[in-house]
Image (cartoon, rainbow, N blue to C red):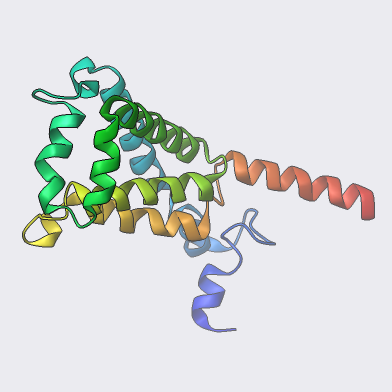
Length: 180
């Protein structure tokens, strides 16, 4: 077992994820929690911000999703995606807001975290390919950074302080009662 394996061990939700193991193992168990909180709060806020702004759902005018889509259409990496949104800007806006809200709540609660994170990554990818694609230099567009931030949660889920972890522990206890 390498030093890195001993430092992280099984502290990411596998066997032995309980207490003990020293500060390195504890830090490893909680390493994704700040990212989860940041992304969850940000996406809940973004969804609520859209849902409480009636101008956002208009097909045209300042601050509307329709106007935004028309502005980015020609500089987008995937104009067909923008054209799809422009067929029904209000519907697209509501779907985006509901998606952000669902992703944010799932991420904060740690419920179906990998699915929520995949949803967040797909939202961020679609926004990067459309809205912030033409940002120059590329790192000025924050959607790419959000896409990258979602990937650790897609891979690792929410191994601690989450409903996913509580459900896994419950299933584990029930399995021991049946077979042990």
